Length: 128
Image (cartoon, rainbow, N blue to C red):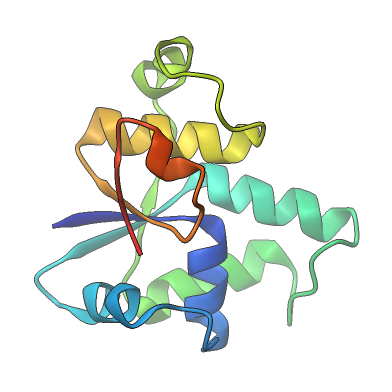
């Protein structure tokens, strides 16, 4: 299965948080699954870090690639097709980062690993 991590899911994996569900942890750990972190999540982390709303043990430019590599997570760039998919999904969620993650998951046939209850209202496979 191809899994796209929600930003909070990536941060919880990185910190070893107990907020990660058992199912999410199992899917993430299964070597048969391919796990991705979107550039959208890297952007969200960088924005929140620069605004002082997110503490990290190091700058995002070092922290994110290091964690991705350590956990075998593949970087997912944003493609034009994904960005242009945005008008096709309903405006249920006010968070632009989450809306783009939904677009990427749909366009790329991925399941979105997220605890966000709003995301399950979209036409995307959301797992938690």
